[in-house]
Every structure is written in structure tokens, then in C-alpha cells.
Image (cartoon, rainbow, N blue to C red; front, side):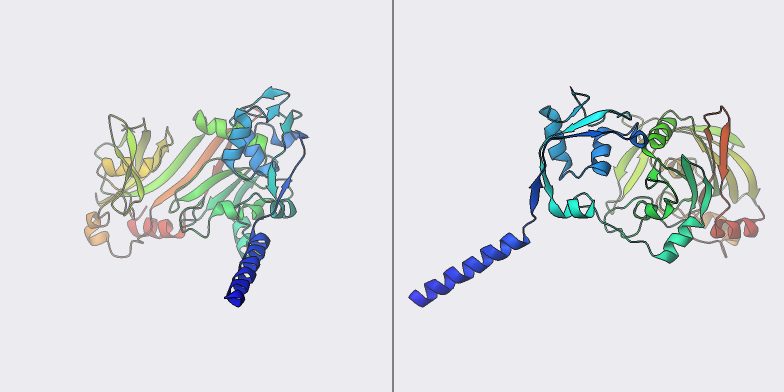
Length: 350
């Protein structure tokens, strides 16, 4: 019995020692007064913490804000408060994981190493670049941000698009995974704040091209159908018309060309930016976008004799984008058709 008890104590001691070694080690920082850099001007306070100072969790940051321990220029602050270059942020003592201090990454953040081949391919898709903005031709099939079970997405590859900038580019809007075309990125926090406000105020003009099954009854028009997010049969996110709880959504369209009254090439201009807005509006008009299995039940069944040879990918392309410049002009950026849509254009005579 004595030998058994001794072995149990020895085993327990070994487990405690192993647990201590495997447990994350924390360091408690002293009070810091950190100046906001000019390139971070316009960044939300919570975003500034994520990118510039390791913080264990967003909940802990919110607690420090509620208790007035985090201050900006000596005053209480809010998570959504926009910072200005030169302001000083008071950061109270709080635990930081030592591995975060060594690596410079926040806890839970995955570091994705993009291969040289992937980086070169992404840089080859740059359509425009200056000191503030960068635009790429996003390929169909590449998700902009990560999700459940998603291992490859653009947000994890943005380091490859840093070029000579001091910061990695920032996303300011999104395209669906299967939508190709112009995607705008900000090259600094201040540029991201300006661009985000442009998208919120709808001062950015976006032009999409789509090939739809069938032909709209009118040559041009305005689709104004409120959309609400719903859960699909498999748990996937989608939207549907809902005149009670749906959010206002507007899309203007015009027919550019038709093919045997069975398909049409549309120019679409969204006036709002709802999830899946163009895809849902086209389906509600009775002309689903080719290749859209989510909103067009059988989008190819409309094509009858034209079905053969049409690629099955989504035929929605962010063709062009225009934004106001500081000089009072417009910056216009366009992207060429992806290969599957170019093939369909040739097949249908567009």
C-alpha cells in the first residue's frame, strides 16, 4: 500500500509539473502611454489594439474600457472611437502571453505563410497601386475572408501585397467567393477610414457584368426589393425578400445584349451593399445569374439548345469601380473578364 501511495504521489507531481510547463505563460505589463502614429489616424480604438498592441481578448479590452482604465488623451474612450495621429493612449497593466510578445502576433491569430509562387500570382493581379490604395483583379473561387473550415483566403495573403508600404493592406469591402473582378484595398489605416466612409456613403460607383438565364421584360430599370438574411436548408447564409424586416436594397440594371431570347448580358449597378444583393435581385426578377446554384434553382435549364458548352461557374464580375480623388477627379479601375465568362461571351455572341 505504501509503495502504491508513493507511486500515485509521484505520478501526480509529474502531471502538475507537465501542466505548469504546458500552461501559457503571461507577463503583466506596466502602465504605458503610447502615441498614435500618423499612418494609424482614423483607425477604431479596438482595431488599433488588435494591430498595434497585443491584447488577450476583445472582452478584456471592453472591460478595461468600461472601467475607464484605457484612456485617450486622458479621457474615457469607446471601442469604436476613431483615433487621430499624435493622440496618446493610456494602456493599463494587463496580462499578455509571452509567446505573443516574442512573435508580435495577438493570441489566436494564425500566421499564414504564402508561398513565393502564390505571392507572385497575387501581385500579377494588381490593377492599380499608389501610396494610398491598391486594386486587384480577384479571381473567382478565392474567398476574401476566412470562415468555418476555410484554409485559404485573401485576407491571410495580404502581406504579399505590402510592396514598399510600412503596413500590410487592409480590406475595405468584399466580393463573394465566386465573384471575380475589382477589389479595392487600403494601404494604411487612415486610407482605410476614408475608403470605408466612401463605401458607407455610397460615393463609390460599382459596375458589375452578369450573364443571366432568360431576358428581363424591360430593357432597363431599378430593382428595389428589401432583403433579409435567412438560413438555408444546409445552414448556409442567404438572403430573401422580406418587406417587413428586410433592409432596403436597390440595384439599377440595363440589358447590354441578348442571345436568342434565352440569355442576357446585364450591366448592374448596386446603390446599396447588401449581402448577395445582385444575385438575389436577378433571381427575383426571374432571370437568375448563370452558375448560381444558391439563387437560381436550375439556371441552365432556361438555355435549352445553348446549354452545351456554357461553363458552370458563377457569371458575375465586378467590372469597374470609380472613387473620388483628393484633387476632385475620379479614379476609374476596371478588370478584364475571367476566362469562364469570356468563353460564355464567345459562345453566346456577346
